[in-house]
Image (cartoon, rainbow, N blue to C red; front, side, top):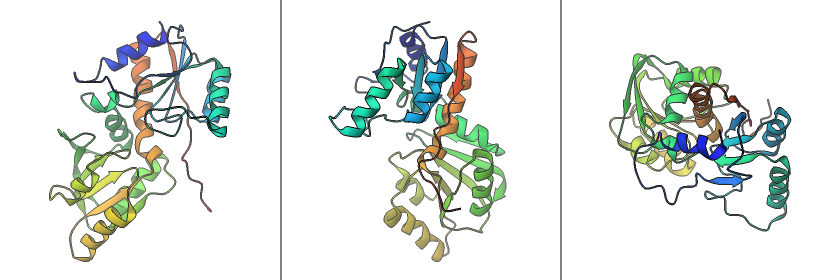
Length: 261
């Protein structure tokens, strides 16, 4: 199977719509390359590219930009040029898979995150882009939920804004950095909102004010990679199911932050 054929099968899983301006395109290599080994990751970091090459990957599928802007527009800049050279010399075909997995039913990224969190409850998929609500069978405090997510998803530190110790039953997932997080945080339907990145002086302070005014409201900031990588693990399993003849493996890029402890 060729790289472009596999990618077109994945793209076809998305809801019908307009995708002419999608970032989900081939970023390097030959789309016609035959694929026996497919590597998947959140980012095509230099280490991931090196590891995928050593493994013998023909195709590398990533969720996020390789060249520091949403559409991967190339610039003549020292570090970008070094990275482009590394990728080109690897011989790997590199594809982006970002817009389409967020338009599947269910959203593949959210499905993977929720699957690996292992929380018991009823999932509510909404018409809002990248918004899924989980109605828990048993209440959890934001602190308890943060501890569970850190353990099960391997996130080093989750930041908690707002309520810490009040039992909640509604968890809103808005993974990555989608638009609409503030609107969901303000919604009377939400109690705990999960996201990857957030503006501290706006969303963080709003959540803190809610708590200090006696409202049950929390924002849990997971970090961008921690909030979406289990979605890419889910897609790795999907590729295995779709094409058992292709060896698929997830490569960990690691969180972008390091810590003192």
